[in-house]
Length: 263
Image 1 (spheres, rainbow, N blue to C red):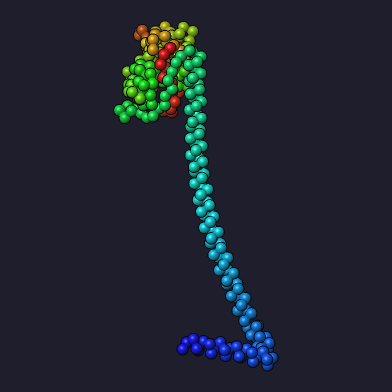
Image 2 (image 1 turned 135 degrees about the vertical axis):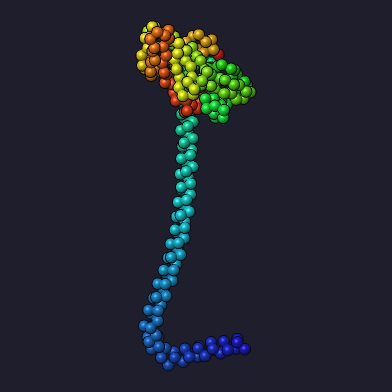
């Protein structure tokens, strides 16, 4: 039924258009309708164009946002990689200094890395080498160009503990780099500093003089830098004087070290 009506409607429209065409009326109708439909057509075109552009703008914006996020992620990854490369370069430079020191003084050593601090004491650094790498108790540990930072305190198969010079109870024979090579004993001050003790009262000490290891300990080579004198303490009537020593390196930044395994 509906199909029959549709056919009749199409046929009627066709006959009307044909009649208007033969009668010469169709051009007149077109001229009348065209001015009316033109603004509508233009409006429809503008709407369609704006909608299309809007969709395209949204797609472009989403694409730009995705690209921006990807670039930001790339920047973060590159910054992380750059930081890692800088760290490795710094460690390599320190290791070269330590190896150069060994070669100049005909010493042997085992490079180690600081992997943590002991939970029981901030003055114990955990190292990534142990018995399997030739480490043993009492071996000196240096940083950079021959700076003594401590002694091996505990040794496991693959790890060990480094006791820093600032540790209480750690004593090392030392001397002052002056004309008389003033002898003394370097001892830790409860984890907060280093003190040079048992220096004869008649020795002349001055601020900024370097303090190095002496040759009294067979395991510790002579001449390893410990630090410099910052404050001298003298008391009349006593046989000995003492001095506060500033470490040559900040111990909280230690990362790549060298354990002296033999002289």
